[in-house]
Image (cartoon, rainbow, N blue to C red; front, side, top):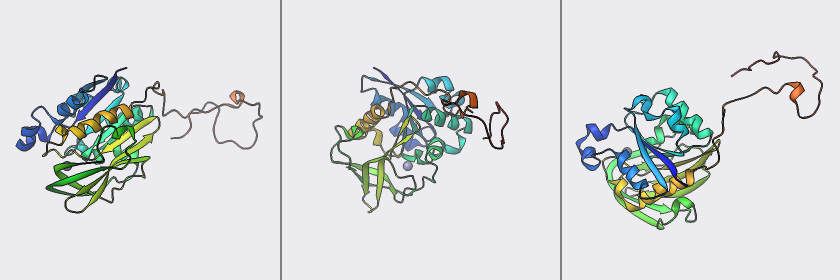
Length: 261
Ligand code: ZN
């Protein structure tokens, strides 16, 4: 079994900021895909904002088991129809992993339905990540706690819905805490938000972070066939009811009508 993962990167700061370009000369998406490729059962490819249709055509998404998303400076440049397409594929069974500043990415905000806000500080402080759900598959081979010497602080309240599971919690040197590994299910799709990964620090070279990424891809993979017509809302006519009934009472709709959206 091979899990087909696509790492999507907005690929903006890597080309515009010399610090980021120095750490990730081939782009963060390439480094993240390299972490995934250390698992022989994950086939990782990349897509970027600059590709036609952001590299996320319907055919590409249909052939994607798990999509990873890193975005920060250009959330607003992601076309609405592409964001809607990603959401529909999650509903029908594609896994989605949101990384760091993707808390404000269009697909994540649409799937959560809440502001997805947080407090933040860019001071290169130490982050200590606690594994609070040690038996969760995403925490496999991850220690009870590990440190990233330089990270951006994200602080609570993180205005997302209550998750299915909280896998990691972060403490920062300045004193704040943050729920940094959260799972959700939206339709048939498994969704994981993972906090670390500010672009001016080498976070995606950290071995524990890379283990989490591989574990998360395996966890998010839904091997069941993709649900078709996931947004359909069909009318069931009287004659097709499982039990025989007679139509009665006043009616609003005509037979065969599409219905309102
Ligand atoms: Zn950041």
